[in-house]
Length: 283
Image (cartoon, rainbow, N blue to C red; front, side, top):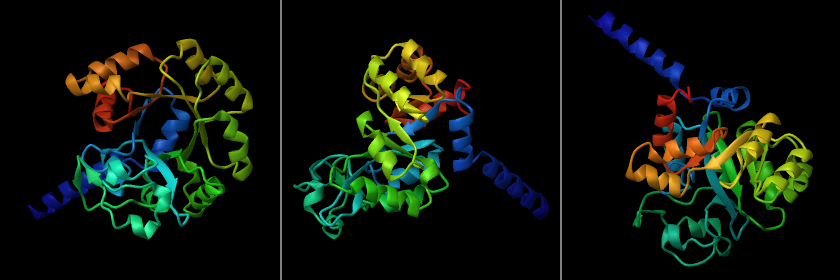
């Protein structure tokens, strides 16, 4: 009896290890299987935990999400931290900008979730990278405007050994040469706002993924796919809102409108992952 129980445990452990997400599996899908749609968790998986927190990042990893999007800013004493807004008011209830506090001062303020304080504190960029290492891709929405901040971020990416699993999001494609001059090894995800800008980006070189707007035609998205890049689109807003009201309606509509998009960012990553698996669009 004991021997049978032990065998069952071993089989369960083996099954879990075979199906667990690892960065190698995610990167293989990302680079080698464009027909598989990957899921990006907006501000990490924050339905149960504060956005841009280590707990939300751990939750994204637990759910088996492919990519966690995080926002990065700089403190008064030049520490890169995770925070979407310029101020900390919405996420901590305290007044003031991120860059008006030192990192130590920010640690005095617990992050809020649904308006209530939690045990989570504002994490450093480095801690987020170390937590993600070997487990999940990271989309860096870089919001630090201070001189030298991008170079500092690239240094922390290289120091943590996470360069292969990050995407450095650039809202303005004109910033691409500057970032490449700092570190050519760090993958860039430029945002294209229209067809003309898409053509400009494609002429600048090959990028692993290009972020597009909802106004894009299928032809432009096909041009991106033909160039060997993934097409990133957001479910944020209307599609996610539809999904909250009636399961599958928002995701059905998104995929019907954007048939060639193969990275989807959402506030509902667990639901989207389940939906895609059910459609055979995610392993």
